[in-house]
Length: 473
Ligand code: ADP
Ligand code: ASP
Ligand code: MG
Image (cartoon, rainbow, N blue to C red; front, top):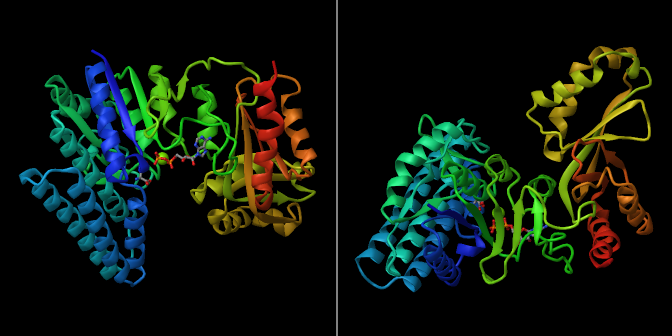
């Protein structure tokens, strides 16, 4: 049995034209695969609008969510009216859109009354865009003559219950998927599954993090032992850089799981950072393709990349970061300072993106999201209060408005000269490197630069290293 899981991102299902295109792709692939499964995002911008409505309700303003309801009703009605013939099916779908939007309004009203939006309420609220869109695509497929049914991923992906950033429990998800999806597939029905969320064992909706529909597709691919997982998006594949920063960025035909993991982790929005984990375990090939250019092959991601190793293949950047430094001339003599520093960071739930070498040996530097800086510094100061009083540690401070730029390519670190060329390119551009990463992956080199040098650093590496590598004989 051949199984294909295909995910359509927000732009790929964000208008009547896009949905028509997505439906055509599903129907086309249904000729080639015995068990095709579609996973859909909300229409582009919908998740943001739902979240915004909830947040402003929490801060006392009920007007925002009311206007979101009105806007989303118009947007979904227009799409449904344009796509579906006027019959009972269309009327039922419009009634469903209303039900979900009413649910949204009543959630927001409760949030307003309580004066806060809990992570669990936020997950229930932000899941509504996918719930609507799965029903729209399934109806469109049925109108085109296919058998299709919308399935809420709360029935399939069982999670650890962490709101906003849930992790799937794979055994439970496998069992749920087998009992809910397999009968549909055996029956020749094309399931259209909601991306972005699953449910805790209690049944509560838990989202997988923003951009999580890619991850949903990979989880389902694993649960179904899919032959391939395809991510349909709005660019031709994974590119040498974010095309919004580097207009000359090019599609990379083949990448390894390791390379793509580094790219996604260090900011390439094209894939959710956790997408690779489920497919890597089963060695399922992952493709990134363009909904609006379906004839183009896109990027294939597999165990091994099929092109030249030891070259820089892509460059990416992650913004909104701060570099925190713990420094003091007496601190290196004190055992356990690093361990205590990082446990203080962890106590605030902050994720450390990079630990870096600075020019001074008497310091520990690391990069965290700027939003976490205040509580993290306070936690470190309290953990190291004695050392600060004694003068072993002089101060804990942060440099804000920095970015991490990462150059990615398998074999980079172990091949002499590759990192040197990256830094040479930055030197040529007169870009100051604030810190360099100490990571373990052989697929990447990361460094910190000031936020206002970000675009230039990315462009410089792209021009001097990547483009040159691609065109050298
Ligand atoms: P979707 O809604 O389909 O999930 P996203 O907006 O989440 O789409 O991701 C696709 C976008 O990722 C592209 O439009 C592009 O702007 C951005 N992007 C950033 N870095 C890269 C990269 N290296 N390759 C391709 N796209 C990238
Ligand atoms: N709709 C969700 C988001 O905007 C999930 C996704 O599109 O992948 O974050
Ligand atoms: Mg995305």
